[in-house]
Length: 381
Image 1 (cartoon, rainbow, N blue to C red):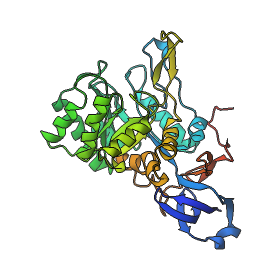
Image 2 (cartoon, rainbow, N blue to C red; image 1 turned 90 degrees about the horizontal axis):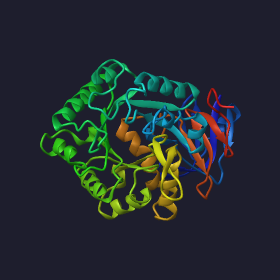
Image 3 (spheres, rainbow, N blue to C red; image 1 turned 180 degrees about the vertical axis):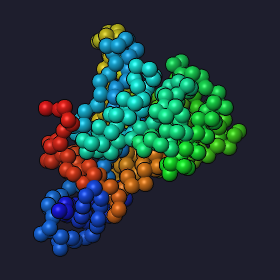
Image 4 (cartoon, rainbow, N blue to C red; image 1 turned 90 degrees about the vertical axis):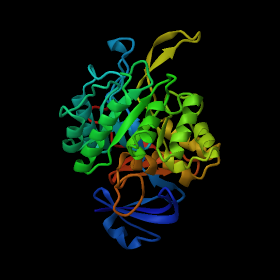
């Protein structure tokens, strides 16, 4: 049985015009002006008047939860499948946060595999804030080679909660990521949490300028935390690096405005990504600004900020959606994700002309229909 999507305005994310899309199993088999010859053998989905884009990718999300700065009760919960589908997220790359002890790397792997079984694509990074790391096989290189879902490693710099790693320590982790990636047939990235200390991105420039490490394996995130940090990120992007702007927390201004500013400063859209930091632990405040507890960071802000880029920033759909489709796919090295193209995974989002999400397909299976989630997680009612 095929699935045939008819009469859609297709953004691959490049605009391809009105097309039909043929899906079988979890792959895109054909994209043509007319595929009526397959109708009798297909489940037909008429997308006339709708826009179709690739499924959305969130490359920095805490699917097992995070937080904990106010004790055990402030640790945020796991992410539910239906919450991801509601915002069009069909691929996630997850990671640990500040805590690599109470939050276990093997539990993260288990949740990633569970999300796969429930119907979306899920990957992970080993490591956490600390320089000691958190791995499944007892080494970063081993995880990269032997653990299918591990795409790289996370570490934190310029943060009071980090281990204040030296350039040499970062280089050793980069070596493990890169060599492990070569053997494991993965790109390999060192995903770097950036805090608010004055050192900002200085250690990363040292890696590239002094030690000549290939910049494409260094993946800084939370670059929009402060204006000064974002100005450094602009420099990093102009050097050829990919910069990740957090949409759910850690931002000095609206993330879509940061993108517009970077474009004005000469950064190409192809060197920027959005991620949510979803289910990180955020401090909740009362009306007087007093902390009263913890709340999970939202997971739906990537799409909201992209829509703002289109509606308020006047950015073409084909450009804005790169931030949450092909760009994170390139950053993570996912060669079968991020585009609507023959041979790619059949991850698709359909929108009405107001850019409201109406339908979602993940690996060829319809997960949302007419704005209603029709496939939920194992323990969701």
